[in-house]
Length: 401
Image 1 (tube, rainbow, N blue to C red):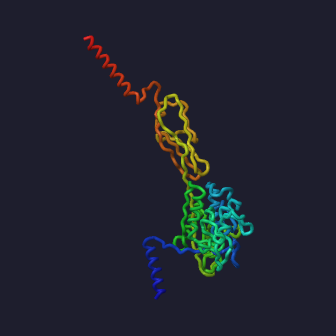
Image 2 (image 1 turned 60 degrees about the vertical axis):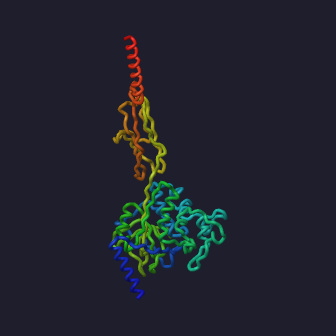
Image 3 (image 1 turned 90 degrees about the vertical axis):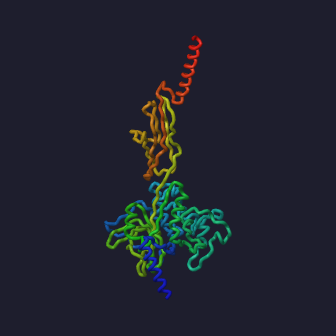
């Protein structure tokens, strides 16, 4: 009877999903592999097919205290090289010391940080426990408060005993917040987007092709040894239409490019896919200095400078008057040496950064007064003087009469 109820519940959930388009939340899964492949696991080499499509510029990193933070770290390193240079303090094309600290801060198994400089490894990865002997993390054992989260492994809760993670393990539901929180830590102007996809529902080959064609590497959670359970996070950098349809990836265990058939998990099928994540980055920026309008005298000068913060790459500038582009004005500085009355109007500057983000300054009005022109504010005063003159003349006339 219990099995029948479970089956009916599952059927009802699928029926509801079909009607509403809402996919039920997936139960979180773990990665369980270490710094080297499990016995018998082999990553297939890249085929020589000319139909393969790959993203250039995705760095290949080796396992750093967890396949999860390492796989996501390659995505971060890729975006760092696409103009989002604040993601990694230094270069990200190779696994530099800065990359190491961004993936999982602190020391390593062979050279831990000295006491007092604890980071991810010292607080959460020691002792290097293995299933089924889960041990309290070092920060708990010695009774010290852990450091403030500062790397992908921190945000992913990798190796944390409080999250039931052994050394190097991570949960699938921590991929999205890890990417988003790390990006927020590195820059307030970067806007991350992360989406989870599950094989058999929202993850299909069309999604993979779409992301790769748009230049967005993905992360998969797979069953590398084909035992029917998840065990490893990998970075997806390409695909091949086949047949068979394949995905191209970095496996965190070596620097080579690999390729496997795109299929779901099942016993006896190595590299079956459980789910994946797509990532995107946009940015915003703020104006530190903008034009100011006001009254100007004919023959005078006008000088403005636009300064922005948070722009990706080198911004470009376009100036407008009364919504019409001003030819030749393409610098952050704008000036008119000798103002003329016809220069009056509404001015604004459009700024586009290297990522294609477009923002405009507030539109301001410039009023250029002609020489010898009466200021608008002075007209009532002149009218009052004229009135007094008429009154004085009238009084003198009546006295003579």
